[in-house]
Length: 194
Length: 80
Image 1: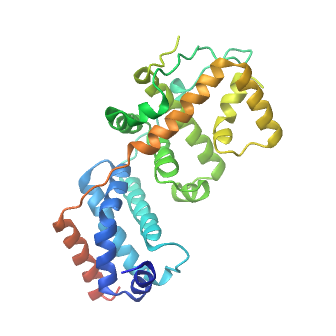
Image 2: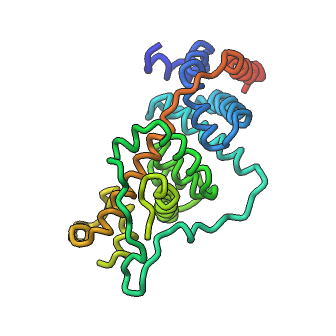
Image 3: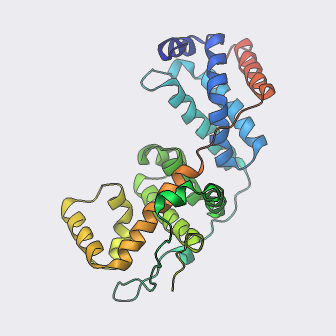
């Protein structure tokens, strides 16, 4: 089933189109919702809810984007909604993980060169697992900024809307999250600071 | 531009969103300050490793696919 047929079938509520969509997208959506929710069971529920929501909202699919993009957004929303329904923890401060400066504006630290070239760091087998674990250590609002912008590839405006914040607030949050992530990764990449 | 200001501008610089005059000042600082050059390099690598860390394909078991399809059928049957 090509994209045009799929889009027509989805809008019409055609069972074959939904089956094709579930079979082609469920794995990718499960990966997305698991990144947000952190466990398989909630992730599966969120994917299921996403497909039901998509079916109910089929009349709103205008065809302005690909069907896969549309269902991706719905799945992210389903996962975020589930996340919000969990008991909230007070937001942790990440100031200790941000760079520090002298009164004259210079860094207090000398950054030791990351010993491996970037492409080797990326290619190293353990890097992905280390980075995933490290992102999981970030407080939730910072983790979400990294997930939606850097990993899901959403625009600032779209991610801000999904997270119920402004574009400028999200840009700042993403920047602070990346700075904190750099600090946490530095000891592993040969960049301990003095 | 100080190192602190450069740090504040990093996200916009990496995204190519700095106004031209600020971008020039930014680049002048990076050329002159090895510490900020390394810091910017590490920031860029951090963004790259975050982007690639989750490039995973997950196979969803058939029973999960069937459960989803069944839920959609139920939604259809209930007239949703």
